[in-house]
Amino acid sequence: MAGSAAKIVISERQQKLLEEFSQSRTLGKSIVQRATIIVLGFAGMSNEDIAPQAGLNRQQVGLWRQRWRDAWDALCVWECSEPHRLREAILDVLSDAPRPGAPAKVTAEQVSRIVALACEPPKLSGRPIDHWTLRELRAEAIKRNIVTEISVSRIGNFLQRAAVQPHRKKMWLNTTEKDPQKFRAEVETVCRTYLEAPAKAAADGTHTVSVDEATSLQALERNAPDKPAQPARVPKREFEYTRHGTTTPTAGLDVVTGTIVGPTLEATRTEPEFVAHIARTVETDPNAEWVFVVDRLNTHLSESLVKFVAERCGLPDALGKKATAAS
Image 1 (tube, rainbow, N blue to C red):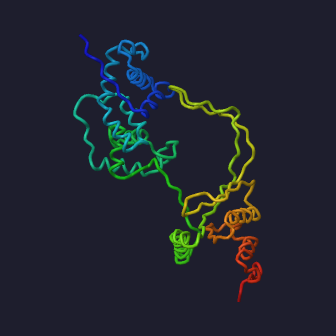
Image 2: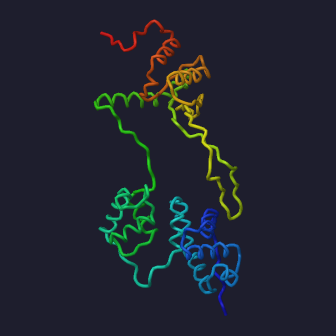
Image 3: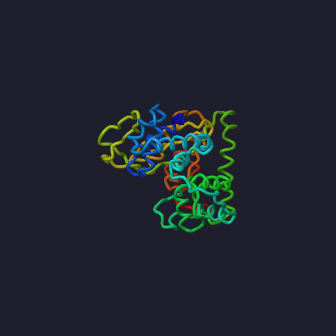
């Protein structure tokens, strides 16, 4: 007599990914079949009913239900600790099982080479991606004969232990200041301004605001409205769009409260537009003290901005002449 089918349990996020895989036209046929088995099994269907829909026999359906059941605890750990890797972990579960035999041992040298590979730009390996995924790393490690076979989850484990995260990126900006002492002094001034901001705000209501522009953002209008999410279907967005030129939003971040102060939207970022933005920001609390943190863009150092600040501070007669240095 046939035994009872393995009970299928999946989380909400796992279900979303499995439904995506079951309808995919880019993944391999075997992955689509196995994702379909798990989705239908979770819906309560029997192996006999699932088999014709998945294009497999009853025994094969039962095998993949068991494999999902056995792997579910480990998937939950991935989902809680490394949610960005859940997709690859599920694909690893749905992939063909390794051949019978003792599990391959990975030496310290091989682990070091895999971690070093993750620290290389993918373009050095001729891969048309801008950051590594676990599946791409696995494929490249096998291609380079670092290992003959390894699972995606095991590569993820090596990277996690080494605290290497090739999937993440942080933006940074290299300074153009050549004098290290001058650069250090400028950094210390900015940092001190941020550190003193909460005390100044509490003492006399001083606003410390970091201001910058996002230039030349495309104003795009989709040619058809978005389609909302439906059961087993992700939201859809129209591919075609109409261009309406570009725009430049300028905003100030109150570094104490974290709120945006006086955002503006202009076609460009000219000198008069930036002065007008600062003026509108100050008018939101005209009797308060204001400290603005800006970069050294020419419009942030303009003559008209200096005159505006001098007038607000009651020092219009203390200015010299533009482009004339004091002796």
